[in-house]
Picture 1 (spheres, rainbow, N blue to C red):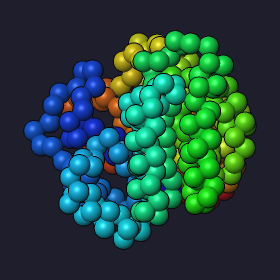
Picture 2 (cartoon, one colour; picture 1 turned 60 degrees about the vertical axis):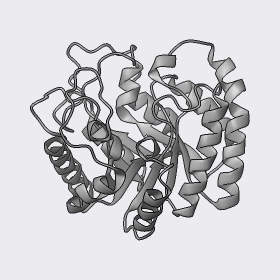
Picture 3 (cartoon, rainbow, N blue to C red; picture 1 turned 120 degrees about the vertical axis):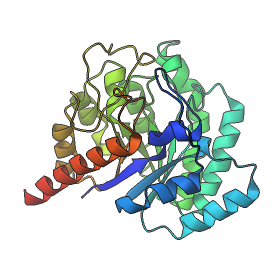
Picture 4 (tube, one colour; picture 1 turned 180 degrees about the vertical axis):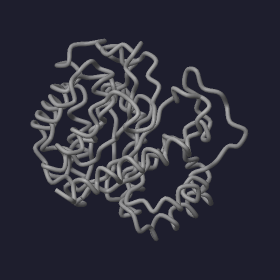
Length: 289
Protein backbone atom coordinates (compact mmCIF):
# COMPACT_ATOMS: atom_id res chain seq x y z
CA UNK A 1 0.00 0.00 0.00
CA UNK A 2 1.24 3.48 -0.81
CA UNK A 3 1.25 6.12 1.92
CA UNK A 4 -1.38 8.74 1.16
CA UNK A 5 -0.41 12.29 2.07
CA UNK A 6 -0.29 16.01 1.35
CA UNK A 7 2.61 18.15 0.19
CA UNK A 8 2.63 21.48 2.04
CA UNK A 9 3.06 23.30 -1.29
CA UNK A 10 -0.66 22.68 -1.82
CA UNK A 11 -1.23 25.54 0.64
CA UNK A 12 1.36 27.87 -0.91
CA UNK A 13 -1.04 30.83 -0.91
CA UNK A 14 -1.26 30.59 2.88
CA UNK A 15 2.53 30.66 3.08
CA UNK A 16 2.62 33.85 1.01
CA UNK A 17 3.30 32.57 -2.52
CA UNK A 18 0.90 33.43 -5.34
CA UNK A 19 0.98 31.78 -8.76
CA UNK A 20 -0.47 33.35 -11.93
CA UNK A 21 -4.22 33.85 -11.66
CA UNK A 22 -4.41 33.36 -7.90
CA UNK A 23 -5.96 35.70 -5.36
CA UNK A 24 -4.34 36.34 -1.96
CA UNK A 25 -5.86 34.83 1.16
CA UNK A 26 -6.83 36.74 4.28
CA UNK A 27 -4.90 34.52 6.66
CA UNK A 28 -1.24 33.45 6.57
CA UNK A 29 0.02 30.32 8.28
CA UNK A 30 3.34 28.84 9.35
CA UNK A 31 4.39 25.19 9.16
CA UNK A 32 3.08 24.38 12.65
CA UNK A 33 -0.29 25.82 11.62
CA UNK A 34 -0.15 23.63 8.50
CA UNK A 35 0.41 20.49 10.56
CA UNK A 36 -2.54 21.43 12.73
CA UNK A 37 -4.66 22.19 9.66
CA UNK A 38 -4.15 18.73 8.15
CA UNK A 39 -4.24 16.78 11.43
CA UNK A 40 -7.87 15.70 10.93
CA UNK A 41 -7.12 13.94 7.64
CA UNK A 42 -5.41 10.88 9.22
CA UNK A 43 -2.57 10.91 6.71
CA UNK A 44 0.14 8.29 6.24
CA UNK A 45 2.67 10.80 4.87
CA UNK A 46 3.38 14.54 4.83
CA UNK A 47 5.75 16.66 2.74
CA UNK A 48 7.19 19.87 4.20
CA UNK A 49 8.71 22.55 1.97
CA UNK A 50 11.76 24.09 3.61
CA UNK A 51 11.24 27.32 1.61
CA UNK A 52 8.18 28.01 3.78
CA UNK A 53 10.06 27.73 7.07
CA UNK A 54 11.89 30.67 8.66
CA UNK A 55 15.11 28.99 9.80
CA UNK A 56 16.33 32.25 11.29
CA UNK A 57 13.62 31.92 13.93
CA UNK A 58 15.49 29.44 16.12
CA UNK A 59 12.71 29.18 18.69
CA UNK A 60 10.13 28.35 16.03
CA UNK A 61 12.35 25.75 14.34
CA UNK A 62 12.99 24.14 17.72
CA UNK A 63 9.24 23.91 18.40
CA UNK A 64 8.57 22.55 14.90
CA UNK A 65 11.36 20.00 15.24
CA UNK A 66 9.94 18.76 18.54
CA UNK A 67 6.57 18.21 16.92
CA UNK A 68 8.07 16.39 13.95
CA UNK A 69 10.11 14.09 16.18
CA UNK A 70 6.82 12.85 17.60
CA UNK A 71 5.38 12.19 14.14
CA UNK A 72 3.40 9.07 13.38
CA UNK A 73 3.49 9.55 9.61
CA UNK A 74 6.09 9.15 6.88
CA UNK A 75 7.94 12.49 6.71
CA UNK A 76 9.31 13.98 3.50
CA UNK A 77 11.46 17.10 3.85
CA UNK A 78 11.27 18.91 0.50
CA UNK A 79 14.17 21.18 -0.41
CA UNK A 80 14.64 23.28 -3.51
CA UNK A 81 11.58 25.28 -4.53
CA UNK A 82 11.61 27.10 -6.89
CA UNK A 83 14.88 26.45 -8.77
CA UNK A 84 17.01 24.26 -6.50
CA UNK A 85 20.64 23.96 -7.55
CA UNK A 86 19.91 25.83 -10.80
CA UNK A 87 21.51 23.08 -12.91
CA UNK A 88 24.51 23.06 -10.58
CA UNK A 89 25.25 26.78 -10.97
CA UNK A 90 24.25 27.91 -7.48
CA UNK A 91 26.88 27.14 -4.83
CA UNK A 92 24.97 29.03 -2.13
CA UNK A 93 21.93 26.85 -2.80
CA UNK A 94 24.15 23.77 -2.45
CA UNK A 95 25.33 24.95 0.96
CA UNK A 96 21.71 25.54 1.99
CA UNK A 97 20.78 22.05 0.75
CA UNK A 98 23.46 20.47 2.94
CA UNK A 99 22.22 22.47 5.94
CA UNK A 100 18.61 21.36 5.41
CA UNK A 101 19.77 17.79 4.81
CA UNK A 102 21.41 17.87 8.23
CA UNK A 103 18.12 19.09 9.74
CA UNK A 104 16.26 16.24 8.01
CA UNK A 105 18.73 13.82 9.58
CA UNK A 106 18.07 15.28 13.03
CA UNK A 107 14.35 14.71 12.48
CA UNK A 108 14.86 11.12 11.36
CA UNK A 109 12.96 12.11 8.22
CA UNK A 110 12.00 9.21 5.99
CA UNK A 111 12.87 11.08 2.80
CA UNK A 112 14.76 14.19 1.70
CA UNK A 113 13.58 15.58 -1.65
CA UNK A 114 15.93 17.77 -3.70
CA UNK A 115 15.58 19.87 -6.86
CA UNK A 116 18.27 20.65 -9.41
CA UNK A 117 16.21 22.40 -12.09
CA UNK A 118 13.21 24.61 -12.79
CA UNK A 119 10.70 25.23 -15.62
CA UNK A 120 12.41 28.59 -16.08
CA UNK A 121 15.62 26.71 -17.01
CA UNK A 122 13.93 24.44 -19.58
CA UNK A 123 16.11 23.80 -22.65
CA UNK A 124 18.68 26.49 -21.85
CA UNK A 125 21.72 24.24 -22.34
CA UNK A 126 22.73 20.75 -23.54
CA UNK A 127 21.97 18.11 -20.91
CA UNK A 128 25.59 16.92 -20.99
CA UNK A 129 26.70 20.28 -19.58
CA UNK A 130 24.10 20.06 -16.80
CA UNK A 131 25.12 16.54 -15.82
CA UNK A 132 28.83 17.40 -15.79
CA UNK A 133 28.24 20.43 -13.58
CA UNK A 134 25.76 18.91 -11.12
CA UNK A 135 27.35 15.49 -10.56
CA UNK A 136 30.04 16.63 -8.08
CA UNK A 137 27.30 18.16 -5.90
CA UNK A 138 25.16 15.05 -6.14
CA UNK A 139 28.15 12.83 -5.32
CA UNK A 140 28.61 14.70 -2.05
CA UNK A 141 24.90 14.37 -1.25
CA UNK A 142 24.95 10.64 -2.00
CA UNK A 143 28.04 10.14 0.17
CA UNK A 144 26.22 11.71 3.13
CA UNK A 145 23.07 9.70 2.36
CA UNK A 146 25.03 6.44 2.25
CA UNK A 147 26.87 7.19 5.48
CA UNK A 148 23.59 7.91 7.29
CA UNK A 149 21.35 5.38 5.49
CA UNK A 150 19.15 8.26 4.39
CA UNK A 151 16.67 8.29 1.50
CA UNK A 152 17.32 11.18 -0.89
CA UNK A 153 15.34 11.68 -4.07
CA UNK A 154 15.63 14.08 -6.98
CA UNK A 155 12.38 15.50 -8.38
CA UNK A 156 11.56 16.06 -12.04
CA UNK A 157 10.82 19.73 -11.51
CA UNK A 158 9.99 20.78 -15.04
CA UNK A 159 13.43 21.77 -16.28
CA UNK A 160 14.89 18.54 -17.67
CA UNK A 161 13.72 15.57 -19.71
CA UNK A 162 13.25 12.13 -18.16
CA UNK A 163 16.33 10.73 -19.89
CA UNK A 164 18.54 13.20 -18.02
CA UNK A 165 17.27 12.01 -14.64
CA UNK A 166 17.77 8.42 -15.75
CA UNK A 167 21.40 9.07 -16.71
CA UNK A 168 22.01 10.73 -13.34
CA UNK A 169 20.34 7.97 -11.33
CA UNK A 170 22.03 5.18 -13.27
CA UNK A 171 25.43 6.86 -12.92
CA UNK A 172 25.02 7.27 -9.14
CA UNK A 173 23.77 3.72 -8.60
CA UNK A 174 22.90 4.03 -4.91
CA UNK A 175 19.89 2.46 -3.19
CA UNK A 176 19.75 5.59 -1.00
CA UNK A 177 19.33 7.94 -3.98
CA UNK A 178 16.21 7.79 -6.11
CA UNK A 179 13.38 9.72 -7.69
CA UNK A 180 10.54 11.92 -6.51
CA UNK A 181 8.25 11.14 -9.41
CA UNK A 182 6.02 14.14 -10.14
CA UNK A 183 3.27 12.81 -12.39
CA UNK A 184 2.05 16.20 -13.59
CA UNK A 185 5.48 17.62 -14.30
CA UNK A 186 6.09 15.02 -17.01
CA UNK A 187 2.98 16.34 -18.77
CA UNK A 188 4.30 19.88 -18.42
CA UNK A 189 7.53 18.89 -20.21
CA UNK A 190 5.55 17.20 -22.99
CA UNK A 191 6.39 13.63 -21.98
CA UNK A 192 4.20 10.58 -21.38
CA UNK A 193 3.69 9.32 -17.84
CA UNK A 194 3.74 5.68 -18.93
CA UNK A 195 7.12 6.21 -20.64
CA UNK A 196 8.50 7.84 -17.51
CA UNK A 197 7.27 4.92 -15.40
CA UNK A 198 8.99 2.41 -17.65
CA UNK A 199 12.26 4.34 -17.59
CA UNK A 200 12.34 5.52 -13.99
CA UNK A 201 10.01 3.14 -12.15
CA UNK A 202 12.77 1.24 -10.38
CA UNK A 203 14.09 4.45 -8.82
CA UNK A 204 10.85 5.92 -7.42
CA UNK A 205 10.88 6.69 -3.69
CA UNK A 206 8.22 9.43 -3.48
CA UNK A 207 5.34 10.42 -5.77
CA UNK A 208 3.84 13.89 -6.23
CA UNK A 209 0.37 13.62 -7.72
CA UNK A 210 -1.67 16.37 -9.37
CA UNK A 211 -4.30 16.57 -12.10
CA UNK A 212 -4.87 18.94 -15.03
CA UNK A 213 -7.71 19.67 -17.44
CA UNK A 214 -5.56 19.69 -20.58
CA UNK A 215 -7.80 21.80 -22.82
CA UNK A 216 -5.93 25.05 -23.50
CA UNK A 217 -2.69 23.92 -21.84
CA UNK A 218 0.60 23.54 -23.69
CA UNK A 219 2.63 20.39 -22.96
CA UNK A 220 6.27 21.09 -23.74
CA UNK A 221 6.04 24.58 -22.21
CA UNK A 222 6.54 23.77 -18.51
CA UNK A 223 6.76 27.41 -17.44
CA UNK A 224 3.28 28.18 -18.78
CA UNK A 225 -0.05 28.27 -16.96
CA UNK A 226 -0.74 24.89 -15.36
CA UNK A 227 -3.76 25.11 -13.03
CA UNK A 228 -4.69 22.00 -11.08
CA UNK A 229 -8.02 20.37 -10.24
CA UNK A 230 -9.00 17.72 -7.69
CA UNK A 231 -7.52 14.31 -8.44
CA UNK A 232 -9.74 12.34 -10.78
CA UNK A 233 -11.45 15.49 -12.09
CA UNK A 234 -8.90 16.16 -14.83
CA UNK A 235 -7.47 14.41 -17.87
CA UNK A 236 -4.36 12.70 -16.52
CA UNK A 237 -4.33 8.87 -16.43
CA UNK A 238 -4.06 8.77 -12.65
CA UNK A 239 -5.95 5.51 -12.13
CA UNK A 240 -3.66 3.67 -14.55
CA UNK A 241 -0.58 5.30 -13.05
CA UNK A 242 -1.51 4.37 -9.49
CA UNK A 243 -2.30 0.84 -10.59
CA UNK A 244 1.09 0.59 -12.30
CA UNK A 245 2.73 1.72 -9.06
CA UNK A 246 0.69 -0.88 -7.18
CA UNK A 247 1.89 -3.61 -9.55
CA UNK A 248 5.44 -2.48 -8.84
CA UNK A 249 4.72 -2.95 -5.11
CA UNK A 250 5.37 0.73 -4.47
CA UNK A 251 4.80 1.48 -0.77
CA UNK A 252 6.21 5.00 -0.48
CA UNK A 253 4.50 8.38 -0.04
CA UNK A 254 2.00 9.58 -2.64
CA UNK A 255 1.63 13.29 -1.88
CA UNK A 256 -1.13 15.50 -3.25
CA UNK A 257 0.42 18.69 -4.63
CA UNK A 258 -1.79 21.56 -5.82
CA UNK A 259 -0.65 24.44 -8.00
CA UNK A 260 -2.95 27.32 -8.92
CA UNK A 261 -6.58 26.18 -8.89
CA UNK A 262 -8.50 26.07 -12.18
CA UNK A 263 -11.61 26.98 -10.19
CA UNK A 264 -10.88 29.94 -7.94
CA UNK A 265 -14.19 29.43 -6.13
CA UNK A 266 -12.97 26.10 -4.74
CA UNK A 267 -10.75 26.25 -1.66
CA UNK A 268 -7.62 24.22 -1.07
CA UNK A 269 -9.41 22.26 1.65
CA UNK A 270 -12.24 21.32 -0.72
CA UNK A 271 -9.83 20.16 -3.42
CA UNK A 272 -7.72 18.24 -0.91
CA UNK A 273 -10.76 16.42 0.48
CA UNK A 274 -11.90 15.36 -3.00
CA UNK A 275 -8.36 14.29 -3.86
CA UNK A 276 -7.98 12.23 -0.68
CA UNK A 277 -11.29 10.51 -1.43
CA UNK A 278 -9.94 9.61 -4.88
CA UNK A 279 -6.68 8.21 -3.51
CA UNK A 280 -8.42 6.23 -0.78
CA UNK A 281 -10.85 4.79 -3.33
CA UNK A 282 -7.97 3.70 -5.58
CA UNK A 283 -6.16 2.20 -2.60
CA UNK A 284 -9.26 0.19 -1.70
CA UNK A 285 -9.67 -1.06 -5.28
CA UNK A 286 -6.02 -2.22 -5.29
CA UNK A 287 -6.55 -4.14 -2.06
CA UNK A 288 -9.62 -5.85 -3.50
CA UNK A 289 -7.48 -7.03 -6.35
